[in-house]
Length: 172
Image (cartoon, rainbow, N blue to C red; front, side, top):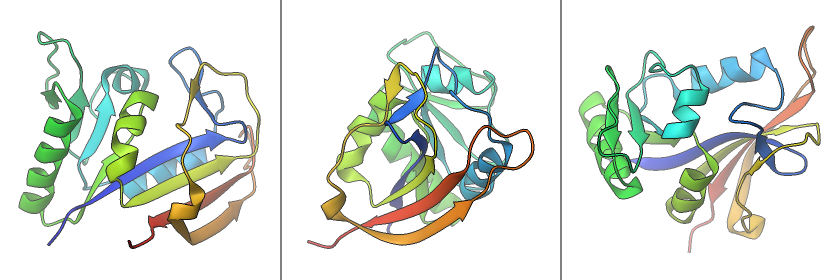
């Protein structure tokens, strides 16, 4: 079974995905969606993104951390030194675990490097225009077909409404 490469990201209306190595919003229900969607599937993260998520492996899925630092090690996670190695290892783990998808969870450089080979985009459009220093890479929406569009009202204590969209790369 061919393994699909899927990017998953929450993106502000202005393209912002991060500020000061953190999310620029607090939306608990969207993070629950991220957890449920990636659970049981390999998850590729850049080192800074991994560290921003609490600096410990996310449970219930193989964490694959990409870093140029040859001395970097994380107990309970796989550390690789290129996106190509991350995708290769992710495919091996997915096959072994009987799943058909690898998730790319950020950050911006990892998204930029994997976008050309991605099969799906799970994009949460956060209805805010926050200040930020990290943006999701631009891409041609004409190459993608929207397969899901689901609006969510902000729950109590959350910073914004959001829309979950899933895009599949068009054939050809």
